[in-house]
Image (cartoon, rainbow, N blue to C red; front, side, top):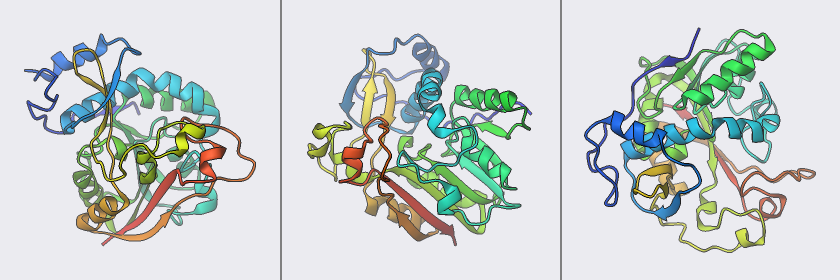
Length: 304
C-alpha cells in the first residue's frame, strides 16, 4: 500500500495570509512560491495566522525539514518506539492508551509512524496520518529497511479527517498536529467524530507554561519574557510576509474547555518529570530546564 493523499486542507480565507501577505487567487500559486523559498531567511514574529495559512505553512515546513528532523532525532525515536515526549516517557511503561490489542488506532501527526509501528507490533491496527508527504516517505523507508509490512499511511490535514464516523477505538498524537492547528476546537471535534463511544484520545504537546519562556536550553530559558495568556501565534515568515512556520498556543484551561466542548472527558493530565540520567538536549528541552519547569503536557481523554 502506498501513501494515500487526501485533499482535506481547511477552507482558506482569502485574507488568511495576514496584513503583510498577498491574498492568493489559487492554492497552486502559493505552493509554487513556497517551493522556491530559501530556508534560513525567515523572520520570527507574533501575529495572527488562520487555518489555511497555518495548514499550508506546516505542510511545506515539514516537507522541507523532514530529512533533517529524522537524521537528528531518528535514534531517539527509534524505528518502532512509542515515546510521548523529549523526557522519554514511553507508552510501554505509561500505558496511557490501555490495552491496544485488536484495536483500530489513528495516529495523528505521525511523522515517520514510529508510534504506529510500535502499536502494530502489539496487535493493534494503526493508521498513521500526517500533513507532510515527505515525513510519510520516511515511514516507507523505515518499513523497507526492516523488511516489515508497511503501516497504512494517509496524507491529510488533522482538522478535516478523511474517515467515517466511529472508525477507530483509539486516537493518539505525540507532539503532532495539535500545536500547528489554528482551530483546535474543530480538530478535537473531528477526533471525537471518528472515535467510537468510550474511545480514548491521548495527545502530548509542549507544556503551555513554556510559552512564557524563551525556547532555549540554557539559563536564558529560565526567565519568563512574555505572557502565558498571550495566544498570539508564533510565526516565521519569508521576506514577502508569507508564513513558513506557525505554532499556536493554548493555556491549560483553553485546552480542557475545547476538549469538554467537543464531548471528551478528561481522565488524566500527565506532566512527565525529567528523568535522572537523561542528559540529551532537544531544542529547548534540557536537564537544566526539565528539572525546574515542566516541558510536556499529556492529555488523556475519553469520548462520551
